[in-house]
Length: 617
Ligand SMILES: C[S@@+](CC[C@H](N)C(=O)[O-])C[C@H]1O[C@@H](n2cnc3c(N)ncnc32)[C@H](O)[C@@H]1O
Image 1 (cartoon, rainbow, N blue to C red):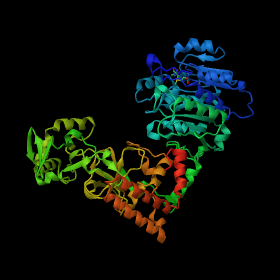
Image 2: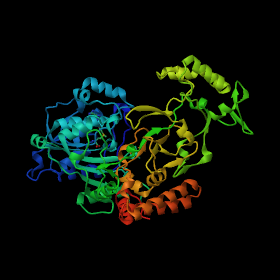
Image 3: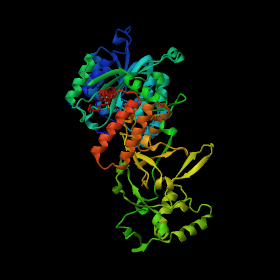
Image 4: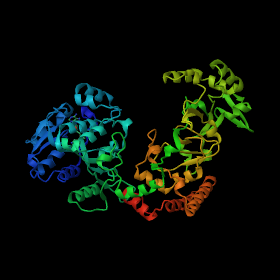
């Protein structure tokens, strides 16, 4: 079939992308696995398709013996053909979100419209005004189809089933990103019976690159709620056999044929998630792609990460914070050849067209600054700094009054303050607009201090300049799905697209061992198993990544392994120019970690290839 596509919102159509035949056929057939056997006759069930489109779900519902079908569709241009094609269906050419809450169904099925709230705020405002269900469940950052889940749940009879194909991002989202009401509503009222991850298939031609899923919810009965009944979650993962590219439509059709015919195929993995319904958290990422055999390995790893029963996480050792946010990058990052001249170890800054020499104190206020792209395992590309950061430390004269502080700054750093004063008006305006103190226009906006709780329980403000300058530090990119951790014990300043691991307390951190661990294949495995993806501010790393307790490696053999890992880590820190050498040494480190954790490397590799598409090497 040729899928007909109308772009989103064209001509008042909202989220109109039609489902391919082979998908709708599967979703209908799949229902039979969940309809209780005592309901032998599909005709007795009341069915709802909340957003019918051209009626592809209706077609397959009718073919499979369902007959009591109600369908909503807002686009009136589809009316004639729908009514003509499916005369037995009770159509309502109206907004589903305004439908009667008392009208109940046994099965709700379809492909609701997807529309992000961020870019379509007006539509959402309008719905919130008009429809009580939207007023009740509106959350910033949500998607339109969340309303279709909320209202679907309300309209289900106890024991009834809801199955949709949607994007899959909501599954791994947590509280601040639009699922604040959705996940609790689902968990209070329903069981998640099945989750089919279609991440590596292109289903909708008009939305290439979109990641989709199919899920089945079952509404709980009052008894099930009272007894807090638990249920398993069946997972089906489509596996991309050729790893690199998404599979074409022909292959998609074959996958769904195999699914319908329940044929085992190398493109399909079926298992029960190690997480059950009662394990799902109301406001957190649901890491459903978590096979029991993967969990077994994770548990084994965690056994070495325990301190009196508690599993140690990265957050027990470090605070993770972005690098520096400046009031204006162009002003604060001086570029050699443009605003800055360096000759024979003398520095000159351009002010009103003239280059003026910096004094020795001022030279120290210019710091090489890097972006996250310079980060590599065990180090960074020394030459790839983007310029010199003008860094005044706000704590330098902080005993003094505001006026005096300004005066001291100008006396000690005459040229650099003059340089900034050229832009004073602009910088002040930026800060005022952001409701920040305009007197602070000399300083980095964020990233130069952290609040830390010390051993005595007191909160202190820690000045990060000495840490940036010459402490040991580990850092990583703010967008990444791989565990690449850089390191420096020299001056390393970075922009906010870099995350730094700052030591939590003034205690000695074993940097060599920690760095090797973070860059190891073991941690790569944990990234996959725990679905850790670093996305801007949404890092889950602190909470999700377990960190070994060195006390767990007490035997002479294990102590020897730990020492060897430290030595190799030291080697990599000091020689990370040659990629081939790095890989070779990293492989040895990986093997040592497997030994340390009593893990079988082959089993781990097999799991990575089986569930996470990592090619076997
Ligand atoms: C993603 S399409 C899917 C259509 C059909 N279920 C399918 O799978 O091919 C969503 C459909 O919902 C319709 N729609 C959008 N908002 C709606 C609403 N609030 N109530 C009813 N239908 C709506 C759109 O016109 C579109 O036809």
